Length: 255
Length: 198
Image 1: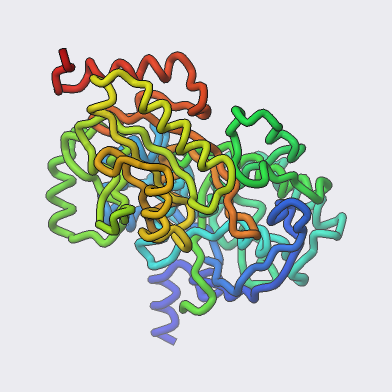
Image 2: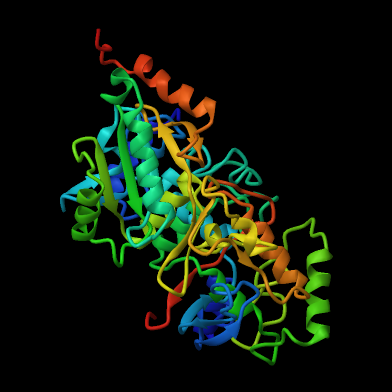
């Protein structure tokens, strides 16, 4: 009893929201085809953090790796608004509650955080695969009610950053994929999209893309996911915004 | 950064294992050389992105099995290089990093270098580890994506770095670079410390 009480006091979180959820691999139809005419995408088994990284967790990271403090980070890796919601470089303060997701972090900072815990950012396909689940189904995307719910989440404006792990948990045991913050993925700069793959053009001087040209998105009714891709593909690695956070992932064979 | 000295002390003290680190206190905040990426060259030697720090450097990314755009990237960059005045050309260096670490071994890069008659005293074709390739692409603003057939779909952006690794100009069109890009390239003859040939 005493031990349990101490644990609850010290952690401020629980097994339900700590650590990583195991996600079986599989084949699915991404909104972003693997290549022209290739609709199915294979996802290997992986582990996805149950919640986004919190301000408290990110604070511990910048204390251990001070080159990521907002007053010390190189401009190459983070823009001017990096961690600006924090009270000071080492105190998140009232504007960034300890259990709320950290936001205003760049892709470089998010990548470094995940490396520091022997993890990595999830790929877009991993993120999309896990985010296809609702509370009971691993792929609820064809359900109009699920799509409507996702859209209503995105339409909501959240002034106060809410705590992680409070929303509904999905069928994999993962929280907050939709309703809380946008999230970085490892290959954010791989999401070149075009409404028409012929945009590559036939002019050999237009060397915009090598290979097959930009990818045409499919499943155009899945607005919530399309919005997310459009947002991610518009970013640069040093960008930070007020509603963009991240979570980490690991390969399936890692603990 | 004002507290860079403190930062370096702290880093030395904690022996950080994180890949990112600040390379030197005299590098500009936004220098591409802030990103330390171990490279393997076409001569199978270890190198780094800042190998030619102090010189103007053209940096871009490619992959060896690319059928059309990448050979064109190499050829048009060679032409760009060839057409420069000697005073610019002597200082200029070129670094091309592969998107494809699985296939672009030093042997493959050496064969490509030979095929294109690349001057390896001034040009480096290099391989980086997969995670570093993504970081380098992010720093250079290059989007790329691996395709199911093993190829890569990628943006072509050539960045001109100044002696301290800052991006001076970029072009997406090495065959017909914009006037601003050419002007920035020519200006490096003045900016560098080596006196121009008479």
